[in-house]
Image (cartoon, rainbow, N blue to C red; front, side):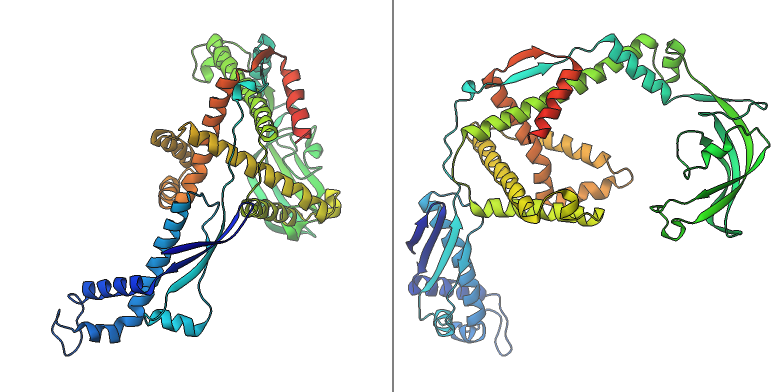
Length: 452
């Protein structure tokens, strides 16, 4: 095998590889000898077919296999010998001249092909201890716990029926109704025993307000118009009347934040509930603070690592981002005018995002490789289980999908790997610690998002 560098410009490489005729013919001869004992042709006993006859019958197909294997082996060897890391699988270009191809297949000419690829850049990693980082933290206060418990109570309000009560806002009514358009009942417009909480806005606009003051046993004609953006297209904008009967009116009964309420949730008492709520809030504050620290760290890595990016990686990342953006705009019916920018301006913005992602991806990969940071099987299995749990009833199918698709598993592995690298850097960077209020943390996150 002969390797000749045709061009080397920046990260781009083009090589010409030549595999001599003598090597191809030797491989060809060995392959025929391998198959002669297994092939069976009419007029010959198994294992007794002359090699010359095998060559006549199978020569071209065998040589095609030889050439395919030769290209795979020699292209991999060429990269290995040069100690280069391609950004993507090299593009292989075989000869286009039919006459030359025929001579190669006949074992009369060398196999020559070109391979083009981009290499990954050399990355000089910064001394992580020189990075200036700040880790924010928020203490959980009694008010935070109390507010969270109040919201929990709001989601667990009970209702007490009152036969004499005139319905008020926030009361729960049990109703039957028959909906009609132009005097005719329409499909899906009737129901019995439906619970509705006045003021929640779960029904058609104007429906709930017309039930204020109703008592159990009352019948009311509710007249409304379906919104122009209503889910059922055939009902959009149409006027409808609902013959409604109130079965029951129940006033809200708000639980007290006491042991009885905690026990209704399966806990020992209110102190245990406060403990659990406090832990959850602390986790939320901690995650928010980590999100800011991680973004600050990624910004620092981007600023301190300047190197040429493989165009192929940037193009691929940009194409993925652009396809996602245009698909979202199409689904939401938005135009570039709605977005407040031109398509060209958006492309510049998303090209910059793609470049940032590629740069950070290469830096994080380099850090992980040089420091032998890996994702263990147990970590990956835990992530897979969490993913499977998000699809109740389809667990087996989802699990099998990931097991059969290495690229899908790689998508699960990537964020775990990134977080482990981030933790590794943070430990070396030793960020300063600063206590802030939850409002200050929220403002810091908002400011960070605006500057993204």
